[in-house]
Length: 98
Image (cartoon, rainbow, N blue to C red; front, top):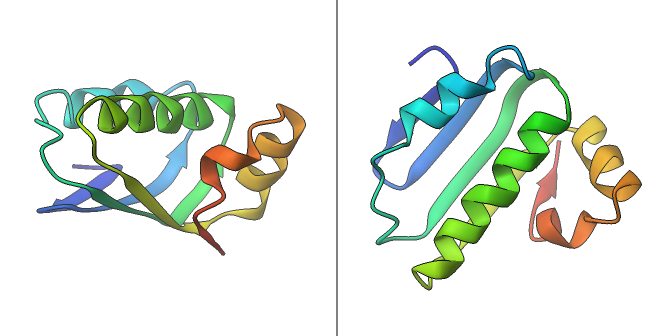
């Protein structure tokens, strides 16, 4: 897929992940069963907006419902700034920043 590479429970996001194309990510993982924890690598993300932050929140919610976790790595600084702006930095705090 253009914006995500999935290898079992390792997901690598890449490219420009903004409102204009975030729906492609939603479609890519629509049928994921959330029966395992996910390692989410954001180091390939070039541009982003709040839609990516909202999607990560949704994925974390879905994982939590199944008693799973999402470990985020490679968080871009601008995503950290957005999370801080919205008072939601704890949702991405398990991460290593890019």
